[in-house]
Length: 340
Length: 274
Image (cartoon, rainbow over all chains, first blue to last red; front, side, top):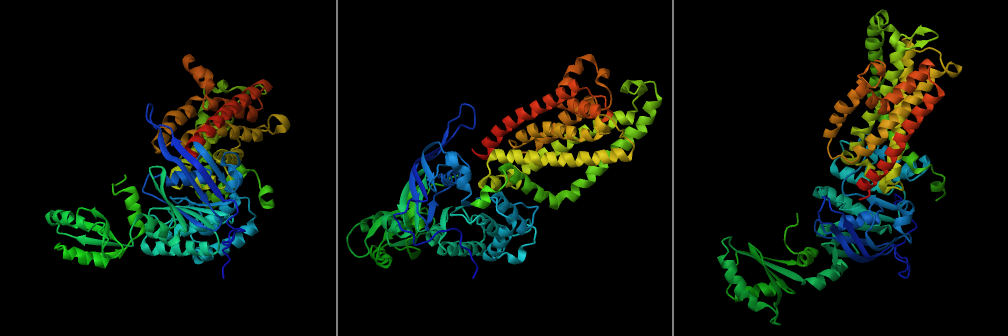
């Protein structure tokens, strides 16, 4: 069994304990990039708490303010307003002492391509003032943990994207951090590589490491997060466990019915299906959403709703009943408009 | 925690990281460190020097012990100061842009207990080391060609020229690193090489005394950090420096470094801690 313990953390820590991170009215405003331009508010007054041993997620579309929040927590971007306490300290005065106890997996890789895998961990451990012997022992454990032991002496450059990500995760753990911050840890990885990363993060979670992560993958948030907030336009739109959020903002099931692309059938169907909303009968629909090629019916019993659809005389080209997911919550809260 | 309190200052941690990296990459740089001085001393100092020493201008390069200074001896310490500048500018441009944009190692450094100013100072310390190395090699090549004569205090004047060249290098490294970190592309670098480095190389008193320049250009040349470095290295190597001139040059170069470090602390913070 590899020792991947990170810090004196315990999943069983009492809830009465002070939160590891506490933000109140946290704001980040960037000055105008051009003379006479408008300042940009990236984070617009958010409140959250991170408790020891939990996995806390920030979910949101691009530009929602997730990365700006992570950078403030990582003490590399000064906050504009509000209060932020990390491990009981103020990042404005104690950034170096806070950073000594954090691990950071940035969105873009920042490995030293001219060095070997092992050397990347060596120089990073030295940044934290660790002794060589200590780093060597920890490097062996961490490379084992991220399944790179046999690549210890390879140059970094030719490693695959997934391997580089795993090396970055190993590097972020070199100082046995009390909080591990991951900014979109699996963006850009292929499905196999993503699952390996998830598996490693899940094991860290089981070992009691406190994780804080951003993602725009719903399945990632559902798999890993105990609690999460949905961010949109710099604000927190909702907060809770994945299950709670689905219960609060969606229905148990979703019925998707598909129509021919010309749209005539779909428009007629949407009009007649509106009668199914809130009937109180089995198969009643809570909400209907019309998309270009299909109609989504949010319902607690998708099969019964499908029967009701057929009963109303509507004949879709295809239909699908599925369980509601965080994606439905997310799209409900942040809208379907493409954010560029 | 005790390991952390016993650890070296933050900027030294960045320096150590860069030295670890350099242990992997030094082989590529060492060839130009040796070939550079070798070629310039053979071509300019020895070959051209023979003609100059035999010609009517032989007396223009000053005198030591009542005899005219040979062109090779006049030129070599100035080329060392130039090597300091060129090494410093080389290390301050592409490698800095790479750490900022391409490999993003600056971002990795500041996620550790180091801050952006530590990363900046650590980089300057590393460049100081590289200049020291190249100028040390330069001195060895000079000795090989007989371009070193015992002079100055305890005859160690030529050796003192090496730290003077390091100071000269840092007077370029500090402003160039401070500026390079703000660059989005490398296009500005070729402008710097062509329109700053080459003119300084040609017009800062390396090849001829500044008195040979057109009068209008002389004040410009006197204001450049390279002239101060050239005059300091040459004065120390030949033993012709006066206390006053040494202090003036040291003060000027130190002031340039100080101002650039202040400027760089701002550019690094703006780029790394937005």
